[in-house]
Amino acid sequence: MKTVSDDLYGLTVLHVYPLTRVYGEAGSGGKRENRNSWGIIVRYEGWTDYECCGETIRSDRAHMALLPKGVSYRWRCGEAGHYYALNFDAAFEGDAKQEDDLCIRTFPVREPEKILKVLRNLELLVDQKDPAADLESRRAVYEILHYYMRSEKKAYVSSDMKSKVRPAIEYLQTHYREDVRNDTLAALTGFSTAYFRRIFTEVTGVSPIQYLKMLRIEKAKVMLHGDFGTVTEIALQLGYADLYEFSRSFKNVTGVSPTAYLKKHCLI
Image (tube, rainbow, N blue to C red; front, side, top):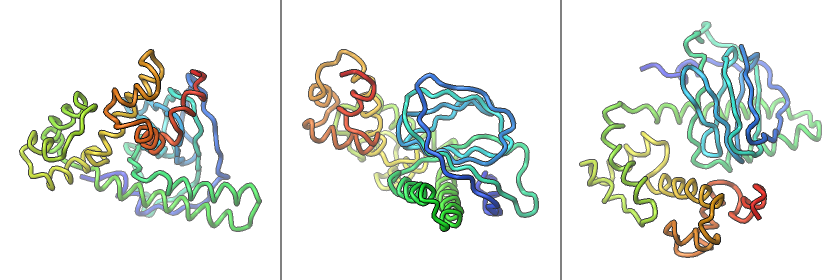
């Protein structure tokens, strides 16, 4: 199966526009026709949904978005927050890019701080009008695209494998409050524990433990918006041993503490 990354190997970055940091308001959105440049969207707060090629694609802290030149789409910011936009022009060896490739893609980011560090350093160079900013901009684009290509190659798994790990995913979605073990999940799929962990990571983009952590945090954000008790009570309801463990996990996934999240959303 040919993937988008197959063509990206022939990409040459011609020009990188100044890195921009944007704050997206919840509920904001719009429509864009025939995008005039390539774009990499790195959200480190909140999330945005894109409607493109007949599907909805979400960009958040754990999923970067790659927007090809010429693509048309609608977008809506579902949760307010900041993001980086790195736009660039590119050429392709042998005119490789095809019209049917003009769809927005996202890819999982297991260690967002690494790429955020690259962009923050670049932002500083741009603000200081450092002569090295242009060279560093090109390097940043290649580094992130390389990350994307590796992620996409790992993400391609047959539909048969996806169906075989589905029982484990469904189990996690209903037992997320519990201390779920990998061997319990593996038994649901019929795989050995080691093989299950590898296939699960290829299918979802994250390990079973990380998937459980992200699932809990998504539930936590919903509960923080409702009448589910104090932050400590919510932590215990979600299966955390104490508030410290919950706060550390929440910040690792969202980039902010539960208290900061509440303040930002005007809940306290």
